Length: 140
Figure 1 (tube, rainbow, N blue to C red):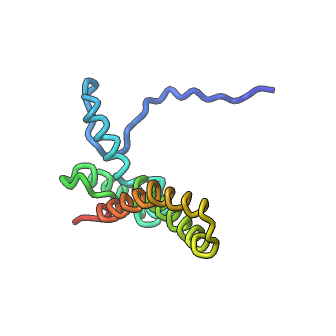
Figure 2: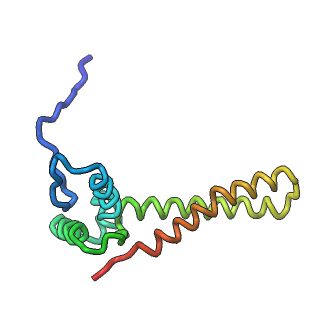
Figure 3: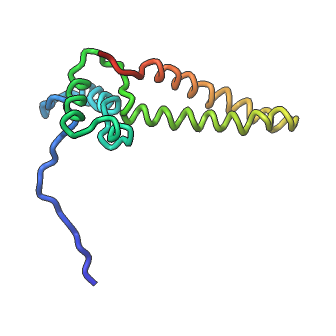
């Protein structure tokens, strides 16, 4: 039985809208570029496919966001915005499940475990997500 394997010879083309980096760019600038890519428009986002009618408007939005002077703005259709929404949902779901357990079952060992999880995991993540929500938006 033969397996069809495709080895593509076409070069990878960057479609993020960012200007090309030189090969000897420092690791710090590469890290900032990757973070900015996370905050840029993701063409695979379902809301992005609904909002932008064609590919040219999507590319124009990517270029506008990439060349903007506002470096801290997270685009609502970006990968980071999707990650923030999923993380907030998980945190919210955890609170809905755990708070009734905490109130109705007064077991000391369970309460200590839940307090430590909430103090060291849930609250810092929630605070970070609130900061990300304030950074998310569209600028004109």
